[in-house]
Amino acid sequence: MNLINGLPAHVLLVHVVVVLIPLTALALVTAAIWPRAARRLGPLLPLLALVALASVPLTTHAGEWLERHVGDDALVRRHTELGDGLLPWALGLFVLAALVWWAGRKTQAQEPRKDGGMRWSALPVRIVVGVLSTAVAVGAVVDVYRIGDSGAKAAWHDAYSKTATGSQDGS
Image 1 (cartoon, rainbow, N blue to C red):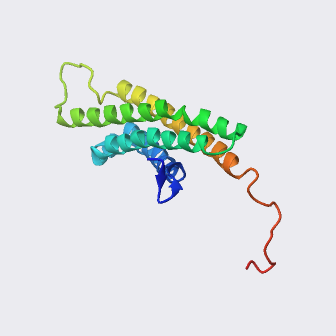
Image 2 (image 1 turned 45 degrees about the vertical axis):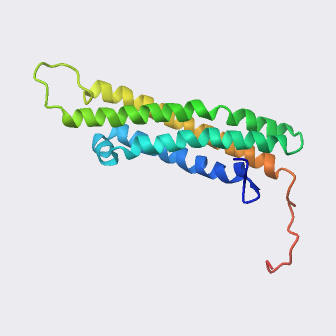
Image 3 (image 1 turned 180 degrees about the horizontal axis):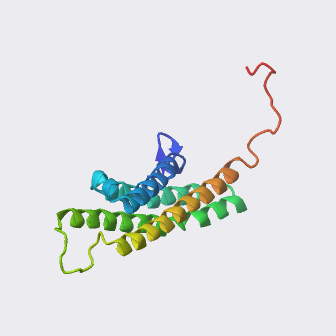
């Protein structure tokens, strides 16, 4: 899928990534830190992460097609290089979202253990999962920001006038 209604698909698909990756990151951190939120989100959390994950290669593939159809530009190459680094972050979000969802299901189904053994709901495990989820979420969101910033610079660096060209009243 390279064109949608005559427009480069990348220009449209990028909005899916820009919304879903941060939304997934926020949902993951909330669920990892707050078990009640994980139970309320249920399977929506890993499904959201799966859609976000699937949107990344679709968007990068469409972006690579677009790169071949625009002039050679260092800013476009930089944007493409940065875009190639998002997939591992999206995969990390998905794996952790599935883990948090699965752990929430297991915890809900378990009776309290009398033998003192570790459970998924045990505080040390929750802390590790929470810290790891926060680190991956922050990394993913920062990467989306960096990619988007480089893409905006590549698209707009010489495509507008720094002074207004219309009349003074805005028409």
